[in-house]
Image (cartoon, rainbow, N blue to C red; front, side, top):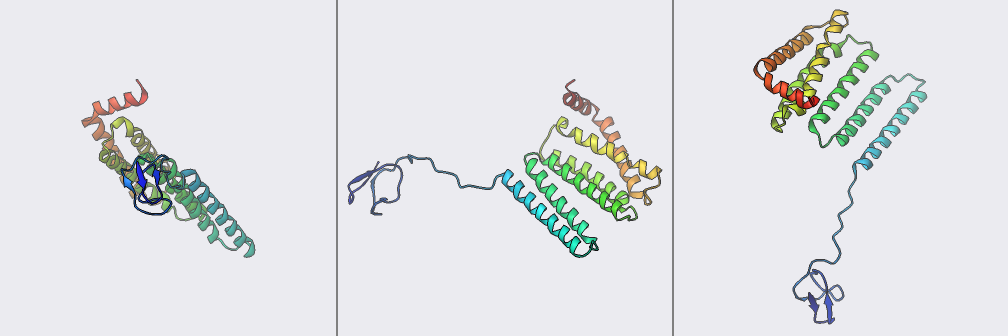
Length: 219
């Protein structure tokens, strides 16, 4: 314990000086009687609420702009989509912050979906089908393999992402057959790469793939 010669009082805990006279203390400090309280920080729920409030306020402002301009401000839809995209990315990041692979995959699919909607709404030339989806799926698969390798993840923990990405990627054949995709080169190259990667996995890592699927499906 510590002792103040001037105030003639015993000081419990670990103090740098006397709390009464601010003078020096003799003796040996003890562990603090009361635990130190952590500084308050913003929780994930509070951040989500703040971001949601900002989004609602942003959408209200855009709606007011539309009314004031007589509904002749088409740019407000783009601004609204950007706001929703940022809001969704923040919520996904907060929800999956402990799972990097799930967070990355979810955010990428949100971006791809927004691009598809924007392309359809603006009645563009189909740039989302021609470029965004092929690049997005190829990036997803390669990034999934890179993240899994860097984190030293067993195959059964990430194979479901690979299967889902490859399956959805192969569905690009539908808009090609229906004539919706007018620039098919990126989509065809992307699907060809997926087939090659699948063949490589089945030929050179068949035992690993089978074991991962068995663990995933609890067989």
